[in-house]
Length: 395
Image (cartoon, rainbow, N blue to C red; front, side, top):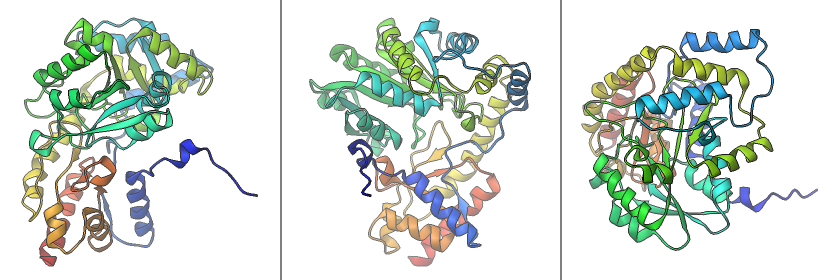
């Protein structure tokens, strides 16, 4: 029997992150000593009080369906979080809780895009943005964030990319994979263009709690009432509270869009996992000390390894201000070690040096690699030293 698949899935590009993770796992099973730096999740366990809250909810019988858009109590906690952190006011009808921020993004594109609608995606970009746009019948339009501008796009670049088919702009600040932040002034300039052209802003703020040094996270939605009305904020507890496996994310924005997403959820997922929602309520209403402790640990690692990384011959790197990734340009290193491109360099780094990183080609920037410092400082330092030895031994 010949099995035919839908065209929408045949066009998908496999995840480079998952591919490198699978290859690293295969080598480990063969007994190879591999240090994995591909992780997109904190290496801390979920705080115990959150686990306890979810366990308690189950024991109290909260194991049934909830509203498709999420528990009212969780929406209330999210609304209070926006008030406290950004000074933005939302109503319950402007909030939807989904099965992780990735699922919420997927649902958003499903309800706002028609075939041929364009979504502007700054590169480097998170690997799932273009695939989700394509699955909704949309067309990704890439705008290059130059490394000389910390990988950020300008208002002029945005203006030049807009056509009559443009429906939305994706902003990710702090960024995965670069860790850079847009400043208030930069957001204001981008916002002016979006207001002028009536372009929806999809603001992915999942890393907002992981900010370092003197940097400050600004949401474009908090800059004006007009920008708030034009913005859909995507967020969740995965990165901030080390709850990646709990799958709780949410969107905040235009009530008509949120209602459409809720209707879609009622015919697809029914609702986010009930006990996980109770855990998320505890995450936002309980102590935030674990969040700060984790942030400090990431910052300590960044400070400890950044200079060592950029001292490797052929490596240059924009210093991140948030998230937990480094995104060095290693084109020169790949060339001097005899590889045709960075993808080949990454494969050799894994097989010969036992260091797993993600090639930048999956993020739209083929001269770079992404490495996560969501692992112990001891392993990070060992990995950087292995990379140094790998490069210097082949020069």
